[in-house]
Amino acid sequence: MRIVTSALQHTAPRCKSMWWVQQALVWLVLGAAFTAALNFFLMSRGPPLATILSHLQSPPSSSSLEHHSLHQQVYLRGEVYALRNSEYLNWNQKNRTGITNAIHALYDHLPGVKVRHRTPSPHLHSLIHTLRQDITTRGVSSDPWDLAKKWANPRSLVPGSAHGLGDVLGALATAPIISSDVGHGGTQLKIFLLLKGGQRAVFKPIRYLREEIIEGEIYDGADRHNGEVAAFHLSRLLALPTVPLAVGRWVSLRKHILPVASKELATTFFKMEGGEVCFYGVCYYCNKNESVCDNGATLEGVVTMWLPPHLPLTQLHHPWARTYIRTKLAPWEEQPGYCEEVRQHVPYSWDKSPRLLDLMDAAVFDYLIQNGDRHHYSVIAGKLESAVILLDNGKRKK
Image (tube, rainbow, N blue to C red; front, side, top):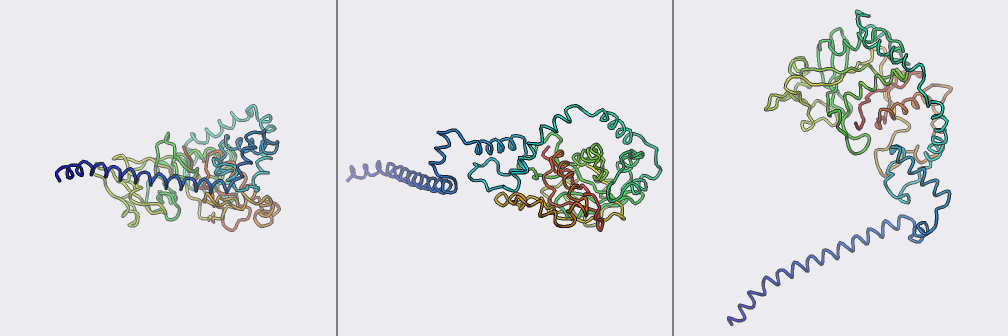
């Protein structure tokens, strides 16, 4: 009996370890079965295996080579916004017939553009000198708010030669803040300001270090405050004067914002143990976990001038907006005749309004600033001739 008991005692640990081995084998078998099923499902969605092998064993046809070359060319040039999901295998792609011809035409046109603009224009240095003078010259106007109001019209917010622009930007950066309120609407943290003299403006705080890169989709992350400033100056360089005036500004949340804040805005302020003052405002994604804090004294941001009352804005859906769903294509991606269809409707018919051309300018501008988030656009309400007012230009990866 003692011998049997001793044998059982030595066998028990061995049986327990064997049970774990058996369990591991069961899970391995289940995992292999799941992987095989998944592979079968993916292969059933793509071309047959024989087709794939034939492509590997024989040289591709000219049409397939052309498609692959175009696919790689677009991807390597960074235009992932055009052919979304480019990292997937070709046979898992939906047929983007709506943009294939457009991309072919684009690359056919590029060589001629490069030859034409290979050397800088002789007028470039003169233009930059004029723009710099407009910014640095002060003392031109004693009433900068009135000057900016006179400049603005449905086609332009600032003239090409803007004497007094330095006074307007200087006032935006230094004028006392009379009141502050929440920036209702939208997805970005912002504060509405009323500056001395009655000028309305929007303050967006710094969210990232300048060298920080945001991973993910091109529309991911918060706005960059310095992107708004760069966009304004780029618009003047491109003679596309539809970006609201913007300038960097340092504010004290404790001294400049909170004492004149509305009750709704003030309730989003709180103080950290280290003495920093923080706030999170009111917007679609605003919450305490995404708050912004000063450094114990000041907070960097951008102040953007609000348009004058005689130019009320209205927001329209962009006909070439993305779906924001990776598995769903927009009509312009699928339909080859989509542009012609859009042109049948006001305000996109060329004989009724310059709107379509303005959207083309906006697309070039957005590419240069790497903004992939203009799913809506703004124009002056009731003005068919209104240019596209380029708001919210801080959505860039770096």
